[in-house]
Length: 97
Image 1 (cartoon, one colour):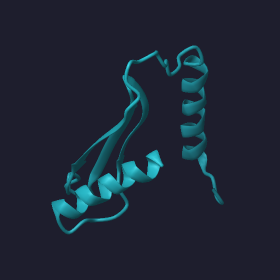
Image 2 (image 1 turned 135 degrees about the vertical axis):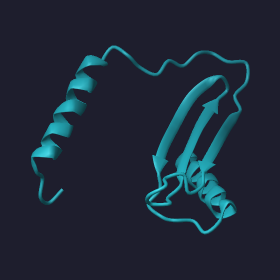
Image 3 (image 1 turned 180 degrees about the horizontal axis):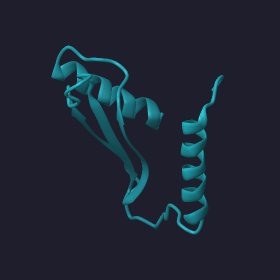
Image 4 (image 1 turned 90 degrees about the vertical axis):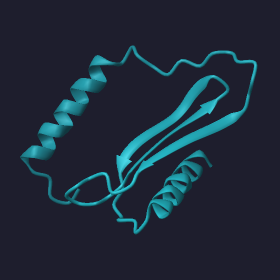
């Protein structure tokens, strides 16, 4: 960031306190009979009533173990639900690769 302000430092302090309080937590991986890589995605097209942007969510499993997950509002506006779904799939594929 080229021009941090007081709200940025407050947000950074909150994140650092969260990380410090959850150091003992982690992502547990367990032995699994299957080693398939499976991704699930969901899109809420124009879910934000003010900006009309879509929310994209995905999770990726290796067998029974969760490897990746994300849920975020996208920066672009899609013209149709099919376009939003395509972008959601493209996000999960790009992140998995």
